[in-house]
Image 1 (cartoon, rainbow, N blue to C red):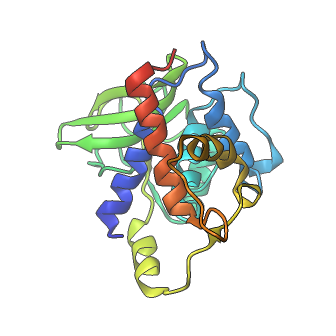
Image 2 (cartoon, helix red, strand yellow):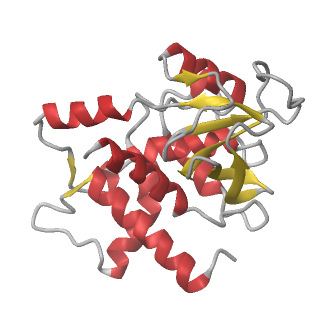
Length: 236
């Protein structure tokens, strides 16, 4: 995939969870995805009642196989530290982000000068026209939803800028065979419930060996399943 395709992949994956919320427990699938990834950041398993904005961003990275360039964390401050540790941090409120960048906020920002301490919230940039940033976030009003913010606006703490170009180069350079799953029991824990549903629906069919599905194929099918169910039935 190209760098742009990788950026779009992260955003499209996040958009499949629009409307997931605490009130009906639909946000729990996001927490489960995060907790299924090992090792857990700081060894901490997120609970269903914890704040989950960084958890949401991390879960999308896990689903997209991007954890090397978009590290996993459940706390905004530690998340910033991780971006800094891999030289993927931009400490500039006036930075014009790209789709797939990660934006951090500080609600205590005075609006005067650069805000360089603290972190309150985080989301994934879905678009920016040079003036307005559109962001998808977990735990915005206890749900997955959108926010818009002005470039160089108040409350911007800084940006995590994953190096998608490295992942694109690696994908192009490595010609190794993809891992293929043959049985439900071999799937990652986060995928089993919906993969079972796909099998029952006849959308995921096996062959004489079994399922014979790659993780990318499986991830795409699950995202499409969630998007279809949300369109037909909503999230209630």
